[in-house]
Amino acid sequence: MSNLRFATRLNSFASNPASEWPDLKGKPTVLQMAARAAKVDGLTDLDLNYPDHVGEKPAELKRKLEDMGLAINGFAMRYYTNPAFKLGAFTHPDESVRREAIDLTKAGIDAAREAGSNLMTIWLGQDGFDYAFQADYDRMWQHEIDGIREVCEHDADCLISIEYKPNEPRSYSLMPDCATTLLAIKEAGCANLGVTLDFAHVLYADEQPAFAAAMIARHSRLLGVHLNDGYAKRDDGLMVGAVHSIQTIELLRQIRRDGYDGAIYFDTFPDMTGLDPVHECEVNIQTVKRMLKVVDRLEGDNRLGSAIDQQDAVTAQSIIQEAMLGDVA
Image 1 (cartoon, rainbow, N blue to C red):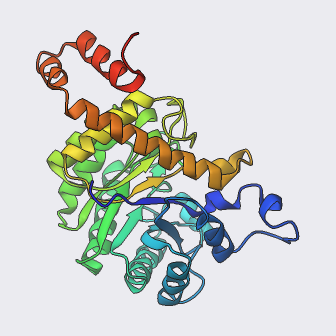
Image 2: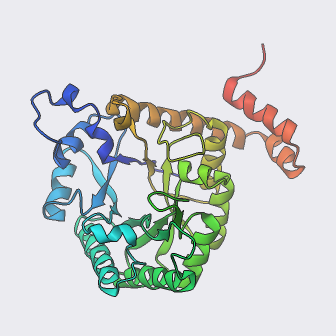
Image 3: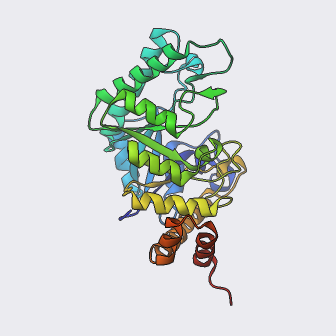
């Protein structure tokens, strides 16, 4: 994790708009939100939703963001342009709707490349089901794999990363957890395909984040890390380390060991309660930097490796608490 980069969710910077734009009528523009994000000390990158955030030529948008001191980490697909997508994007029962979703994704990939990025994140939250006897599961799965494979083959030099989530908006997502996502990646068989691990999604998939990261590194590759936190019941989007500090530190240790070199992206929701998004993002950056110092201390402590080798949970917890909180006086 050399040359550490920090990216963030652009829509977070629409939080409490009156404090930033007292005369604003309507919603802030992409460039207004970006200019606010540029105030964050330590922020290097933005992720942009497609097509929501790309209302002008991608290369021109890139130039304007660079003038603010920000790079584009990647694009993320959003399937909202057609109300029919609510019943599925790559898995809609109507072939013409599936084709529209796939073609929209290809256009997003092209736009990302024009903006100088080679990362497209696809979150297929609409692809799933809500009722028993609603879906032919085998057919729906095949549509999903075919769609993923087609968008991957559109540009072999663009990395396509699947962000999994147990549910929402559908009651059951076709990509609900790490294992199912890795199975889909194996079936699609595309070299430019990988996984985005979202901390809160992993929690409410009832997974241990570091274990999920280890399995991704073993069977595919980790292309994105979304840090946030929550209470493991939904996608809370809380600040980094607010609830699961130890698990976040373990994840950072794991991805460093596995050679992850992408940006750390903050998928938090200060806009849900009107928090100051600049301050919130700065604290997230500071938290990760502090946690990485804890990882450094742990990696330099031979006792931890010995405890893990013996699966000695008590000793390991003692060492971790010491690294986090200091020695007992």
